[in-house]
Length: 574
Image (cartoon, rainbow, N blue to C red):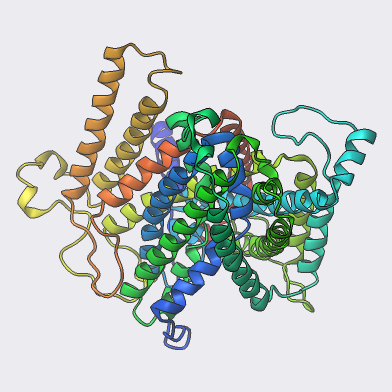
């Protein structure tokens, strides 16, 4: 009996370790940045962050292999999913007085284990984005000279057909990744002038592609003779939407600047909505002209816009787009290599990764160990992995991050008494969050015995589980699951009813109300819809993509349970 009680107590302490929250020091007047950014400045910041190499890589792959001319619909769906996630990100950025990653936001709302998973996923995202930038840049450079490097490697080394891997070893991509790592390692700052210049070039090229593309447009390329508007049907459009979500990564730059905004409650969400809308419109227009200029099935997905202009005989236009794309890819590669050590350093500082990653070189003031280790890994992956596989990895990691942000938003809104040091100064309004609304207590008396927040946590778990079930039924119910009509209908009704009931129970609890910061409207419905849509899109990605993510997360969990859980700074405080 005593042994059983001891085991139960040990298990309870272990679970508490997994769910412990990070506390942050409250900002002082000296540490708070000046509020100087206007809505226009924040919008321009968002436009610069949202326009990158994704335009030149994603559009061709999605148009050629997933959605055809319906790629424009894919971008619309991806924009909606990104907007829902952006709203959640803005609320966190307004509440947590520290610019940072979704890792930090999850740490102060959901707990350490989930924060580690999110942080590990962010490392994966930056790592794969850098590899994709190097591979895409290599393809464009090699194409300028009619593929001499690829031809030489295929002739003297050989080619193969292996899942995840490219058909040949891309030594040029590996060299580009290695040079970028050395450049960052020696303390060369990522100049804001370079970033602004690249953004300006991208915006000019987008306008150029749209104007010249509509001049060269031929509506016959959307006809049934060419395969029609949606040759891959609804599933292809959704797979394309899942892939296109990575094109809208960058709104976090605006959210992280909320502490510097003059009126963050109004300016930050408006700037994100405007910049996302403008970029979504630009992507929709460029994908439209791309598939109108030439038949979608004739595109080379590795450099679609350049190939389209070459097919139409406009080699000078192709050269302009090619130069701009290479500039964008190099900038993104440097940005990812510059940002990757930051999240690694943050996790190592919290004790979740090896302390060696906190080392800063005394002379160049750079985290050289992080850059060298992950730069070497990036170089190795650039040598082997296929670009299309990399794009799929980026998509699933982005959607996973979106899902965690939406879940964390619900947890933060209903949490009973968040640590005073974790939230920015504000003015909570109303009674204690996490408790049942007084008017509904007589009707939900079975929840009255739960401590504040406990019912919310369990209900949120049921909501996420029902969302996964509902999405699986919608995506696989009539194909992979081989359900009879009555079984499909029954599962659909049960999962939908559970999802809606979970929403109603969450809505019956009191929330935090803060008058001076932005909050996601119609919570918990808006974050719940974000979770539902994100999971729905993730399920349209290939099983190999899920396998790759699963392997990466397994490695991360081994790191956490082997090292992080025992060396966490929060463990030392406890």
